[in-house]
Length: 210
Ligand SMILES: Cc1cc2nc3c(=O)[nH]c(=O)nc-3n(C[C@H](O)[C@H](O)[C@H](O)COP(=O)(O)O)c2cc1C
Image 1 (cartoon, rainbow, N blue to C red):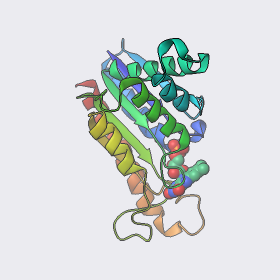
Image 2 (image 1 turned 180 degrees about the vertical axis):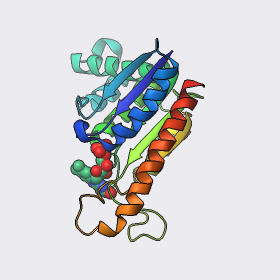
Image 3 (image 1 turned 135 degrees about the vertical axis):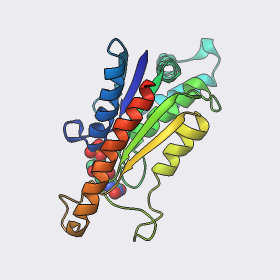
């Protein structure tokens, strides 16, 4: 059995998304002590920012005319797609940055699509936990309702395009404990934190099939 784990935090040592993903991973590992966890950390080791352009233009270029950079990017794209296709279960930990997904996460998505093809459901039926953490709050009735351009995109790609058997764990208000002006939200933030960790434990068991 193998689990694919992706992290997108640019601050790995204090990552709130990693904390939740760790909880789910621990359940999976407990159920599959001999299993393999394949990791890709986009924050600690970002993919080359120009790889998608090289892979996409390379794909549109006859093989014998491709540049070395195009060949390299196409090989990377194929490898990234294969990492998903070969997974028995998947955990994705993706923070919100600047009201959306970051460039380094988007590069990964675009490269997977370049490697697999635009309509290839690379995660068809694969149990997948998508953890997202967000500093503020964007729920119905909040001043910034509608500003979360990350979660809908993540669900569209992972759930609809890649057809994962998707469970979303979303923790908002991660900055409430440390940000002036958010003091009144601390209790709610703590509640969201506890709920996210409990949900991670549950989904970890689902991913493990126990
Ligand atoms: C560069 C940067 C940009 C961010 N942009 C936003 C944002 O637009 N909206 C928001 O609510 N939080 C924003 N945050 C806060 C993160 O979403 C929040 O800290 C999240 O918990 C980070 O996840 P991590 O701890 O796993 O890295 C930003 C954080 C950083 C470092």
